[in-house]
Length: 194
Image (cartoon, rainbow, N blue to C red; front, top):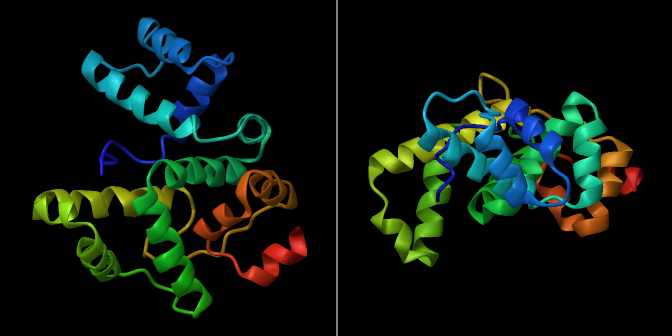
């Protein structure tokens, strides 16, 4: 549950990706050394760099290439995918709540859906019971911000259909086709594109 740092970090992720030459530790070192994120506080920079690198490490080399060269929407979707691979809780929320609501033609994603999902997960993961209400609220706030920044929901918390390109679908499916379930897209649309 350590995803309370920031949002999607689109610009910052692309800046760190520009430093990548096969060694993520080197990226972290260079980013701190040259203050790549223009942070005034070193501890904040370290935390954000660690978070972004942790997400980018989840992507394959082919996905990283598409992240670097792809369209803005492909970049957002790949950054969302990195988040989902890093945090199982978020991946499960995306597939079990967001995508299921999309598939059943429920267009909105009210905050109560997060509460219900969290409470359900608490039954299987007793460690979640120790999380304070204030932290739970922050987790929801950050998750919904990421969803908005990734164009999964809009400013009114309405679910937006994912416009995945054929190249993006194929690239993700090479690693694991199940990863596509973190996007609001129908099975038939995925099959048509593959």
